[in-house]
Length: 107
Ligand code: FES
Image (cartoon, rainbow, N blue to C red; front, side):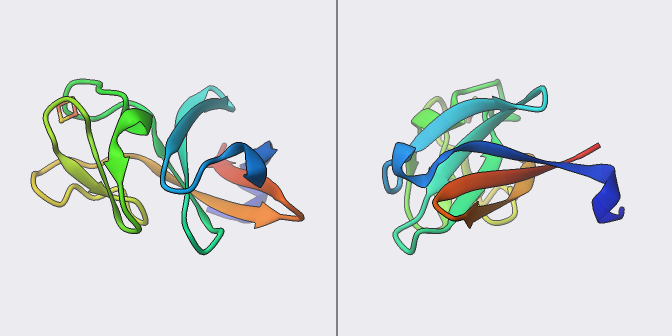
C-alpha cells in the first residue's frame, strides 16, 4: 500500500492524552483508542476488543501492553497482537507532529 492510499488525520493535541491512559476517538469512521506513552509517543489501536467488544481505552496499560477491562486479554500496543490469546486488535500508525497527534488510516 502506498502512502497516497492512506489518509492522515489530526486527531487531538498530545496534551489531551494522559500518560498511560486510553482515550477513544472516531477517526475516518474507525473507533480508535489512543495511548500516550511516557516518552511522548502515541499508539493507536482499535477501541473495541476483538474478544467481545470491551472498551480497550478503559483498560490498564503499561509501556507495552493494554489489558481489556472485561476479561483481561492483553494486547501489545505496538502490534495489536494478543499476548495471552489468539486475537488481533487493529492498529494504525500514529505520530506526534508539533504537539498534535496524527493517525494514518489506510483508504
Ligand atoms: S471483551 Fe475484551 S477480553 Fe473479553
